[in-house]
Each structure stands twice: as structure tokens, then as C-alpha cells.
Image 1 (cartoon, rainbow, N blue to C red):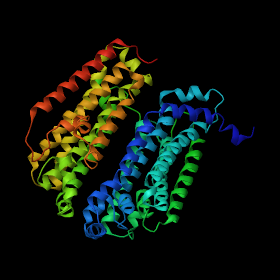
Image 2: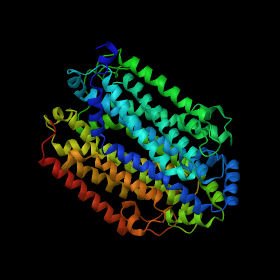
Image 3: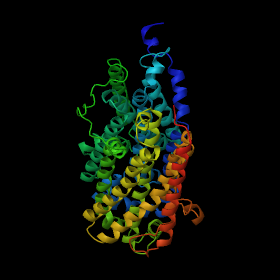
Length: 526
């Protein structure tokens, strides 16, 4: 057996194991992304039924810098091109998030938990774990690309193929980026955070470039992989050569990741964590939980504040873009529940941020599972710290953090829009009741069925899907009510109803209590 082959020994087995572990995570991300894309052509057809209406939309977008920064420029007025315009950037971003989660989970997470050292003591090549992680991400992105291509083929086979390849390419670029960062950092948390920061920078670069130009002449747009996806121009005289940028980036970054992986020991990194003080300063379980999750809380807080500023600044522009389009007005009213377009838009955007906040609360609650399976919880619980006290520290960060990020989103709206500050702030805080229900489900799953706790991602994904595309597809009320967000009063502009809010808060409390009761009675993972 030659040297290169021996370094990849066991890759197939590790890949099968990775896919088995991701049998819930990957299908949920792929399904949400695919349904978001495939629901768009019919939605756009109902919004802009005639070629004249679609041509007018293209003209308006060329003059609306704020909306170009949010979703990019329109290159053609066909339904396929409008679909790529409306969801292309977000489909690429979701693929990137899925990819970085998969790669970090099967590289740095495994090393941090100590499982990788045990696995590597067998017949496993030095680069097999990294190869298996990248292949798992590739399988997820290829599946996503195939589903998008097949679903959009009716709009044009060439455009559908270009769009599917572009979305998959964006995912693979960030998969290989995550592979590099996993070699540089010593913790999975930092690896996820740094890769997410790169993704955020890519979004900002693309937004700045699109805001500056309605075509593709901005250098900033070409510096972002999300800008490459946009400038692939699916369904609008495709530029196939842009795919070479994805191929080159994936190849170069993969080679860098392999080179770095071959120059370090398992568990080590090129950017070691800064050593702590000689005398410990963490006296409580809650302080430890804050120390572990503070980076995540700060990152989400900054992101929600900036999102509030952006959406607030778009409010007047969105109202002008909708104009007299009755179908667009109807969709915003179904999302926002108001007859006034401005109030409906604000309520819809606040609701969308609430749906995204559900992802934060799930990730924060499931941090308990990570602490347990990695063995770090055991020494904490071996001291004078009970299980409930240990869990309470993390749950305080999860539930309190979700309220904090929604508060900051409201303050961002105040900065960006500058009107209705009190009502918009109250509307943001109102979302917390539904967010806490999703968090309560995550606590219940962790406490009662820890092996199935990852299903909480599926619950959050389903709520996001229902809230995002449900109104556009005119889904029946019974389906919309499956999400806790469907029971919240639509503010600002609507009437406040405390009854549903009280029911949601009570349900969240009962779910948390059930989860903690289950945690007290079950064995910890060994």
C-alpha cells in the first residue's frame, strides 16, 4: 500500500458513519432550502402574471439600491431569472451554513470530544477524517443541487442546471473554508464562528457591490462567492465560466486544508486557545455556561441588530416596490396581518427574525448535549453542582439570549426606520413567546430522548418553512397554525391579544419542566 493510499485508509467507513449521524440534520437543511427555491416560481407568477409587470419589476429594482443590497440585481424578467434573483443569495447562504456545520461536526468536534483519537488508533489514515467530512458535505450539496435542478427544469434546463450547480458550488466553497478553519482553531465553537463570520463578510461584500451597481461591474460583488452565484446569471444568458471560480476556490482551499492537516497532531491547532488565568474565576455553573456561549450570544446579537437596521431602512422602499400589486400586498398582509402595507411589511420582517431566532435557541439548548457527550459535563456534576443547576445555566443563556437578540433587532429597526419605535420594539419582544416554545421542545427532547434531540432542528426548520413560504402559497390556516408563530398577534398595527401569548408561555414552561424532569431521571451519556 503506497503512502497516499494509506493516508486515506478507512475513508469509506468514516463517510458512512458521518452520513448516518447526519441522517436528520442534512435532510432537514436540504428540504428547507429546496422547498424555498421551488416554491418561488408559482409565487412570482401570481405576483407578476404578465411580461409587462415583470419588466416593470426589473426596471424598479434597477433604481432601488436598498433592495438590490438585500436580494441583488435582476438580470432578466423570465420566471426562472426572477426565481434566481429572489432566492439565489439566500439559497447559497443556507447551503454554506449547512456545509460548515457538517464539516466542523466531523472534524474539530470529533477531535475536541476525544473520539477522533480513539478512531485514529485503528486502521485509519491521517487524512481520512477530513476526506470523509468533505465528502459528506459534497453529498449534501450534490443532493441539493440535483433537487433544485430537477425542480426548476420546467423554467429552462440550462438555467436550472446552472442554478443548481451554483448553489452546490457555494456550499462546497464554504465546506472547504470550514475545513481550513478547523485546522487553525482549537475549538469547534470558534471554527463555526469564524467560518460564519467569513460568510457574513461575503454577504456584506455582495450587498455593498450590488448596492453600488445594478449590473455586475462592482469589484466587491466579484470578491464574494455569493456574488459569483448571482453573476452566474442562471436563466439569463448563463455565464458557465463563472463555475470555474467555484472549482478553483474549492480546489485551492481543499489543498490548503490537507496541507495543514498533515502538519499538526490530533487535538492541536495552529491558533491555540489563549490560556486562562492562573486562578480560576468561574465560581458557578451559570458563569461557566456564559463563558462557553458568550461568543455565540454576541455574534447573534450583532447580526440581529444589523438585520433590524437593514430591514428598517428597506421599509419605505418595499412599500414603493409593491405599489398597486394586489397579490404582493395580499402576501405581505398574510404574513403581517395588517391592511396598511407599511405595518404589514414591518410585521412580516419582525416575524421572519423571530423564525430565525428559533434557530439560535435550538443551537444554544443543544449545547447541553455537546457538553454531555464530550464528557465535559461529568467533572462539573461530580462536584457540588446538581443536574438542574448545571442545565439552568445553559438554559438561562438560551432563553435569555433569545429575548436579548429580539430586543436588539427592535433597536435596529428603530435606527433603520426611525418611526413607530415603541410598537416595533414590542412586536419584536412578542416573538419571544413562540421562540421559547421551540426552545422548550428542544429541552424536552434533550431531557427525555437525548439521542433524538437533533430532531429539534427539524421542528425549527418546519416552523421556518411554514412561516416563510406558507403565506406565499396560500396554505390553509390549519397548516399555518402548526407553527407557534402562527398564534402570535400581528404587530405593529394589529390588536394585542394576551390570551395566545399566555398559552404559548405556559406551554414553553411545561415543555422545559418536562425536559428537566427527564434529565433528572435518565443516565448521562458515558
